[in-house]
Length: 230
Image (cartoon, rainbow, N blue to C red; front, side, top):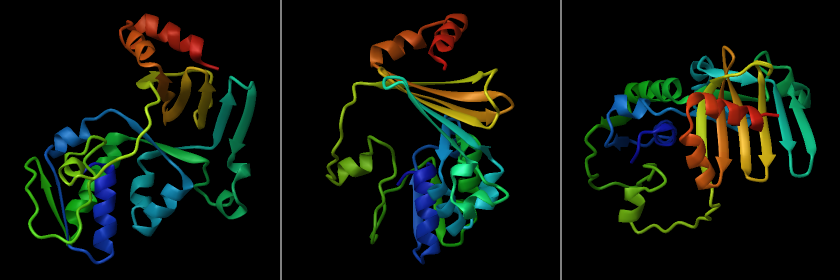
């Protein structure tokens, strides 16, 4: 239940393990692809995608970063990471990177193409049908999962009293293969490289602060962003 990246990967993994899988989503393909967000992939993500035979296809949609600058502005400490910090076997790979960034549309598009082509998977988009007799239900239909609620599955969560504002901007002064993670008193702040000088800004802050930033015009928002950059 749910055909986003999590549901699509779960369907592919289950099908490869010998299950007959039906995956459905109330949204059609166009609506699923239109979300604007970016994902960070780690080496454990790479290993998972390699086991599923997906890495080579998806690597072309990813932007590698070979440096990660981790700054704790509260403690006034910095820890840089580079390819040299990887295990020797990883550092020697031709595609060696600290991590990878990818935008939602190309990643999910590739996953949905593989789901549609898999002989053990039935894909239902745009009209979610109630399942019949099944052995396993995977609730991958979002943080407020109606499937989970219908089955009475509880969830433990913690409210950080924060929201997250994202924006895509052109950035000068940072290396094209460099990512930044700032730990700030108001919340974490990340700059994720997307190629061609573009970065995805992920700005966490109290909800009121995020709403105030969201209401700014372009010029005022860029001024506020400039003040938050390292």
